[in-house]
Image (cartoon, rainbow, N blue to C red; front, side, top):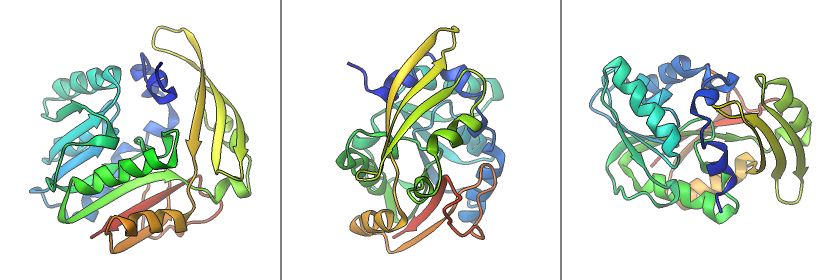
Length: 251
């Protein structure tokens, strides 16, 4: 039986690209480039690359990029898009919990919940961080975004999701304060126009948890900020108003 995140991204590649949260690619890559001092020699791994929007933009700017994802549908779309714009990205179908890379990359990115908070157990989520950290070189950097556990303490997740959704996507949510998990029923239209109902299970994290997990993996410098769509910035102090947080970790 497929997990909810596998079911979600089955036959959803084109519809995915219409969602509001995919519109910030250029600004996000501008920030990532600045973080690595525009060093074109960097090898970059995009975990949960989806349809390749970040991978392809990085490749267009001259970087050596590998993109991994669990969804064949999303990868097929990514490969097609890369060919259309004439860039080379090494797209691979892989499970982020069990990456086979060892100290190969200067930078790992995992943007727009590229797998990390979507797993059904905390242990599985940790495996994604563990696998990503193992893929980094000794002086490597990890940049990722995840759901901010401070947000649902002050706001309705259900109202936020539905107010920011494109046509055809809606959610009915229940947030559990004991587990910081949001159980929800997601209603979408797939690429063929078929209506689908998916039972989702996402984990929200508070900053102290993220810091502890990353320190456990050997990261020495961990910075956490608010996460604005298409406008990542080290000037954005994380608050309860931020639905997501931006994490930058270095060994």
